[in-house]
Image 1 (cartoon, rainbow, N blue to C red):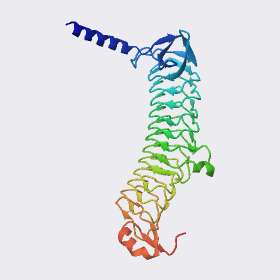
Image 2: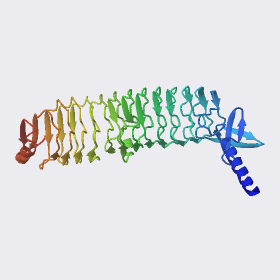
Image 3: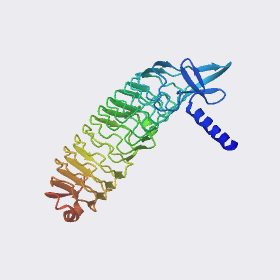
Image 4: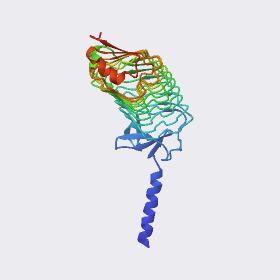
Length: 378
């Protein structure tokens, strides 16, 4: 019986200790020891709904305890989570890491500095901080995590440091006041839904448009829904000959986008990639593309002409469906691509190679009023 009782006592002690997040409390700020020389700012308890901070908070560079100095180097996960009355936070210059959901739903937070030594900003760190209007990311940060600034509805500007290579999934989704994004030349990945629903976003570009800067971008992947619903996006300059992937619905609903630079490194235009881009009027698809996927340009209602290169072997279901003004289509391949139903709704003019007239007539004749063979394409 004594052994059992002892075990129960130990379990209770561990459970009780585990509820306490902090080791020290100095000047109203809670700290946790990381090492014999470093501490992290933390919360009073591990409960996510327990907020320990309000008003204006200043985190020092160092603290002193029992005659020993400790550098303050981290903000723990959930430290300021749900602190709805938190107005501003000044972080000390020794901070190198901002933890998961550290400022989650700090709705009144209007000001925060991210020190130059910060190299890690974890997922959801500033999720739904609706009071933030601007953010400057220091040069040491290479990645913005999942949902880091998602739902920051009043965020108008973001300045990325020169080392920023990866924008995580949904990182800025729903930042409806964000007007422009300037990436460094090293950017390599824009994640799923990263800027989805940023309705005020007008311009996406890299920091330096010189040839030298563009050459620094070995490749750029734009993942699914990255810019979906950015209805005011009019300028897209993200690196000539660098994009190797444009994911499903990447630019769907970008109804102000006047042109599309589909770059040479692509082989497939993904499904729904440019659906509903109603400001597109003409489209030249570069050689190297082999497939135009299902509904890739569906509902581009002002598209009037399309040029399809020799490399395209298939045009999937409704790739150009509901393009009600599409009248001029040029196909340069001598062997006609496979075409599924729902394409070319207006049935106007198709230009094809001179020696391929009959092959196109057999495969495309039912979709066009007239097929015109040409000796040489301009």
